[in-house]
Image (cartoon, rainbow over all chains, first blue to last red; front, side, top):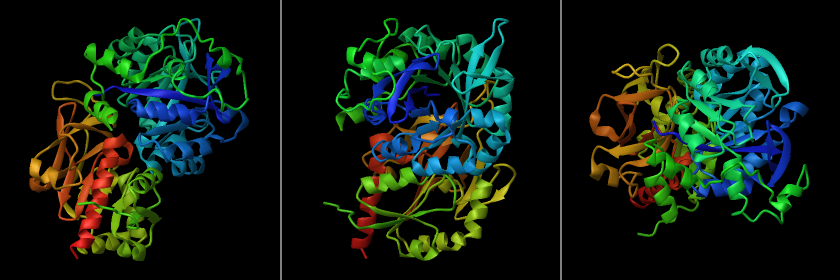
Length: 291
Length: 226
């Protein structure tokens, strides 16, 4: 199996943002500019998450999605604030290829069943935000790790598969934005217990972290944010066209997290290949560079 | 040969399932004039027809029948004009599928649609659906050269999302094969004016768009030879 490398773009209003533990959002720039850059440098997919949608029950991502879909020809998964099959239909028609469900799926698990029947299992991604409790159990949260559900992560992941989800994106809220490494124990526990692909998310701060969550954690894909964004930000002309929402001071100073290694997609894939992990690299990326 | 597909009308068949937007944009990107439609008349008048597909086989086929599109698709195919089936749009051309029970397909291509097994022959678990990039290999280099895959490297990466794969009875129509966890399956077929693939060219970056552009040239050539 070819392991996918997926830039994850957290969106707030018109901006790409990144927080720590899914909180304290900093504005990085226009999502479309990052999306284009990642497409051109060999991203396997893109993952858009509207990080405020489910708090305000709004769906602001649609415009960003439809603009991106015109110029980017790789799969796009979109999550945040999707409550029912009508919302899903609308975002698919805007250009998303897959949708990611968290809050709505937990509130109404039958939505996963209904949506996977209607749109195909492979269109439905269940997003699980996991927090490790002091007793070592992992619990699923909603609303960017703010609301507890009381559900055990493993149990919910297995249930999601049974309901027809095609894929799981598993976020370690504890590690998100920290650069401390993926929670390998968490990823492995779920990846080994379900037969659908698992995307590991939260904590990547070095190439070693990425390699080990694939080799030891059995992840089928990795979602990367900070470690790609903080490199891309220096390659994209963004400073003159960002909108003011959230904390933009750090953007001007480019005062980036020091413990997070920053990489291009090509570097990530080169290291993966060198470590014996198969991924889309040589032919596809080489041809894209040639074009 | 300088091909300009401008103004060629392409009907993207809407059977009320899945994502047609990325197919629409890929068509526009290569200079075609796509419309999303479920009108039999519009399908019959198109210069090219695409049957896309994300969704479940059973719902898809029942929607197609409800909308009367099964006849339209068959009539269009017999006109000899270019047709492209994608993913589920490949699978529903077959005789039958075992997705969520057993369903009869359009039976345009003799063969069946099977579920990707959960285990390899040596007992390793297989992740299903297959989601991601995989290589397409030719079965016959000449057939490849004369198909919409012309100019695509043998072994190129394409984007796949599927839990089922097709098994045509006639091996001569197999245009490309793909290996997933030891299962070698048919990932593309070609039969006269009918081209269909399991992967999504519209999501397969620049190489995928090249397939759209080749297909657009086929529409052009088809009209010139009339």
